[in-house]
Image (tube, rainbow, N blue to C red; front, side, top):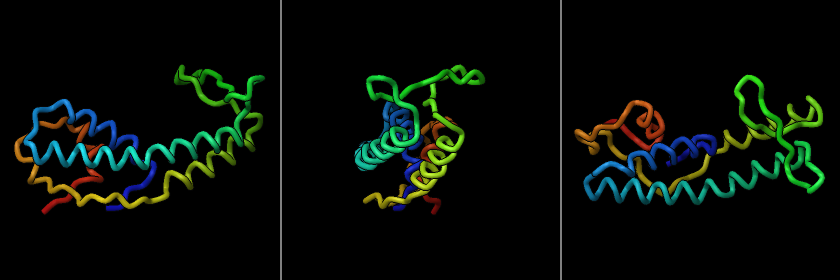
Length: 133
């Protein structure tokens, strides 16, 4: 099955969430194998994201990424030397997240999940892994 790199983080988070449920063995095994496959793709994706940040973002005196607090979200984010650098990073990062990778798993049928209670927010993360019969 093909997955966009930008989807991997939310899928892994959803798989971690259902990992806490008491599931039938076959479904648990499928989720565990899928998480392992996705993790294999997540590592090079994160390396590429960091490489792009190091290329376009500001670095501090130690050569590490410089961060600032986003006033709107109150979260740290990379600091850029110029709007052009931010724009270049966002363009390259968008290309990266749109890349598709092949995961050696067949989609799981929604019917296979049966009566398992999965919250809608978690189901959204799982959707790329599921198929309707």
